[in-house]
Image 1 (cartoon, one colour):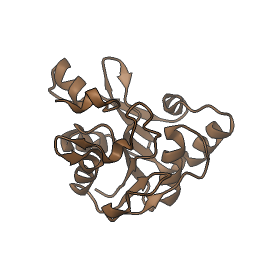
Image 2: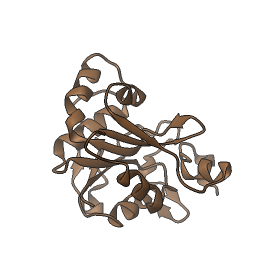
Image 3: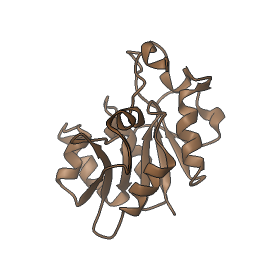
Image 4: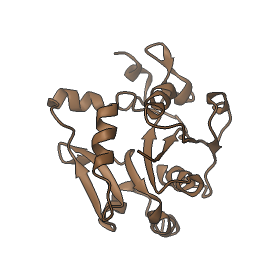
Length: 187
């Protein structure tokens, strides 16, 4: 497997009230879960953040090229800095993503695909998926048009949606649980 992992950690964390990448979740900084998952596959890791404090992780911290308040800017910056065609995008606030899911998504990448996203209950998870560098011009076009929803991208390029294998509805919800507020840190 040859891909870069882009970990999105540049949000304002306004609901958390502090930098959520560094908030302890089950005894570890939240971002560490994404870093550990990435290290299972590669050392090509980029941290997308517009603030300092994450350099201690030992990976390049990439700042947004476009100053917009949307994850699309972080994905854009990561793809610009990546040296691989395929890139796994993870967000620092989704600590339960598994290596099995990453492997399943990676096997769905191919010549005629530019985005691979997991899907559950009819909802695609755009903050956990594979993005091909070829979509950089499309992302730039969307940013310039202020079309900032990540869910708009798959409508314009060949993509695949995969459903994680063998999980119950409750396990699926846990897999994609976002930690956004202090109450989410429990359990």
